[in-house]
Image (tube, rainbow, N blue to C red; front, side):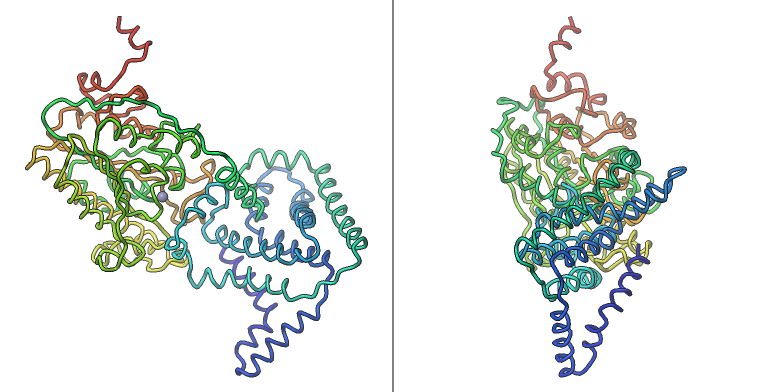
Length: 595
Ligand SMILES: [Zn+2]
């Protein structure tokens, strides 16, 4: 990919050398040269059809290089593939691009539309070529829900230069050339001819190679996600429709009267730590060779090493894991319009507090419970004005633990964890265990060793914070005789350049395991009697998913509700019979079996 990038950068730099030359001359002559260049462009006059053809060629043949490369590899691995079919792909894409742009572009809106298309496409081109990401529905949702601090973490010299070369300069050329218009009917006629030619090309290629396209498409469904920028336009249109045109669903109450069924005198506190971008394979608890869990592995935690996520991005995984819906039938609109696990625990009588150090919000999960956001103000030595290290969660946690008002309490701590690409900003200097690390946001320009070290430092730092929380809970159990437990779950994993893919958010169907295989850790003070920890350890390699989180949380909090599904509670095999009987409402089938 980098070779392709350098190749086209050099072509463009030669092509646009008049501008570059102008920049190195003296001030006066620079101004004259730039003016000359603008005048030169103004002297180029093109018909709208010519401008359409040149711009569409640029979009289809340059900005769609990732799609063309993927398509080429999908075709060339076929035995006896047709060379003509291979050649038809860029032609088909060009004809299709002209057809789409030609229908929507006329007269004065031609230039603005082409400029917007080129600018957006160059950003997508950058994302795909640099990080291997695609702009499908999930990515559009992610981008829209991203805050300024997160968006700015992607801005660096490499990204800016790329955007200038592939987006701004071509856009400037489109802006600068003079468009000539024929009388209305002549203009219409020549446009119809262009569209007619494009339709003929599309139809002819379609007729000759229909079976080839159908076969390659069927076996490589993800290819369509790489077509720039139409996949993003399609996803954006669906996002707008879902968020602004669908009326909100009526809120669905799953259970009006859940209860907490706990025995004994002891108060109970569970801290659920919602992780960010942690992947299971980077945990030494799961067999990773570097000591990334040196703190918690001494504390007797159970690590569920075979867990997979619901989505590959926060916006999907967080609402999905707390929802009664499953990965298969999950959709955000339905999930946010019904009670989630946190709501049921709250309604059952527990005190619920959601403390966030994650700039990306709780994605609608904490809407109906008490929340607290860590202030990123620089006054706090743990914060830089935009982000705070996760240790910042400890102070409000201690404050809450020191005055528990209810018999049962659930505290959710939403971490910033390992959020990229600025991994080096997730851990303080004195927690830089693995070196050399990658102290920059254009991570693709760091060595593999530096990048992995930086990411591993974020995991080791998460482990340090988790161990601090466990120590606090352990003290509470010892000194105040309070029953305590901790559940840590990450939202999705992360790619660190494996097969050229970085970050996360790839469509689940073809997301690599690095993005979907996530860690889950459970710890409880030894005095609790509901679970057999040895038993849990023996089950820790069994496959579980985010679909199990809803019932696991209800189970840990001893919530009795008709929506609890005993089959999906991975802890059930290790629970005492009396604990099961307290929370499980037998279905008619189970009752029948008993008699
Ligand atoms: Zn996330």
